[in-house]
Length: 156
Image (cartoon, rainbow, N blue to C red; front, side, top):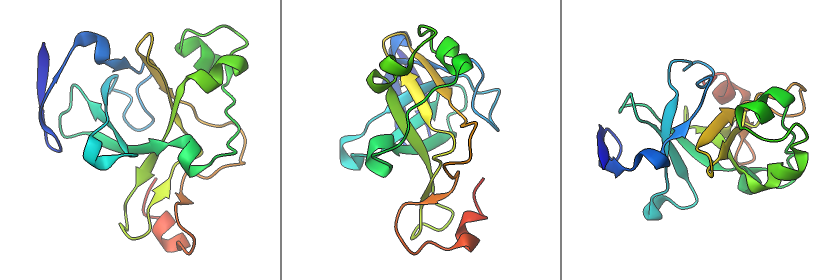
């Protein structure tokens, strides 16, 4: 059994097969490739993408379907390949874990990154942050109505 000492969760024990490998890292964190998906009972429905190599790095996430129920779950070919999916992976997209990274620059007005959802294929331990090629979604989508554009400028 492996373990890491995290800032948010203290000591986290895990098996190697629980690690999610992000072959390209995450935008802005390209050197970070190995994460755990932590689902704490007291934080449901939130989940945490915890770096295995940088204990102080953890992203707060929410299920995409909860934030945007009608989201178009389309994956570009390169993301299908990174997740070791068949070339036409649209049919398989629904079986993947789709998460959005949340930003709390102003805690009373959180935002969600719908432009780049995190997509995880747990059965093989692979993940990717899938950046949309269109402009249908925002990287700073307010979670609640009334969020200001000033707050949106604080998170990238």
